[in-house]
Length: 152
Image 1 (tube, rainbow, N blue to C red):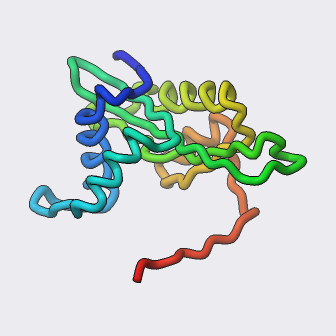
Image 2 (cartoon, one colour):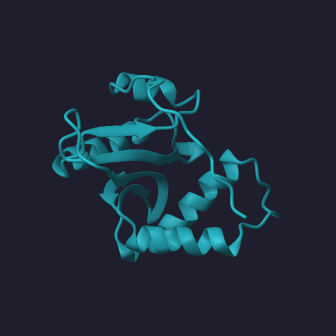
């Protein structure tokens, strides 16, 4: 298994694994199409966004991915750099699960976050993902409130 940080040369592999993951997470059948807006914005984000994506590659195909999106806010006493991050799209192909692939990808992103001066990493965990994140030191938080702002 090769673990690597995705580059623009990996864009098709990145898009394929992300759309595969989204299809499963959102219960979409193969006949259902993603909107052009989602595809275009996802592609642009991988190419231009402030993010790091790790790929697990075997036989020239991505079998896992994990993305860390960076967020810069006003520095505070507890977050003097103002650099925070959000872990997203941690996914491993069903045939490759329970082999430590997700753990390896997340550990690579934690190291990258430290290197970039990030002081906090957040994520939205599924029930099946919680044990992994807790084992890596993540804890549940009730510190923030969220307002979802719709379009239109």
